[in-house]
Image (cartoon, rainbow over the protein chains, first blue to last red):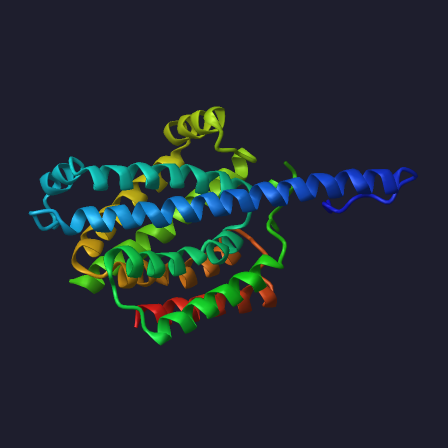
Length: 155
Length: 119
């Protein structure tokens, strides 16, 4: 069954109602996208900052990972990443995986920016070209329907 | 060693995302308010595909932690995004999503950008 508003006697009124609901859904989806990108970006930054100052090298021994959680930056990073995971679950309940993946890719640009600003990593001209490509790709994917599967369309 | 860590991160992430997307679409729309997070946490311990997805996520996360410790953040994050191709193909053929020409083109642009970042 199609998700589009039906053209009945009350078609216009119903159409307006459905469009309003669709707009609210779209806004909520993009709020979740922004929340996810922010939490993931700063969570990864804290994780990188924290793990780089750890005395032990993280390898195959679980003890080193458990010990790393005692570092405040690592702990804060993990907490932010856990919340970002919940945000992403909510996002995946509303939108296609093939929509969520590229749209949240702005986070990769954010990672490069945060790495430069806070960790003093070197960003080249190629990185800025990459940022442009990612933004262009996100804009193109953002213009496609958020959800194309039957299950969620029925919600 | 760094590419082994990238490979573990990518495969585990792709599996985790597919399982999450499949199970969450069946569960219906979720939110991230206090009640929404409690509901999501409850689902994480009840739904078997979500449990399996968390196991995959743990593998992915620990590999990523080891990666981010030894490599620059601006390499680790984009390199782990190689899961894009794997996941977009699986989204089309396993989850039945409609990946039309526009979405495919946009995804390839994003992927091009990520690969450029990883250089």
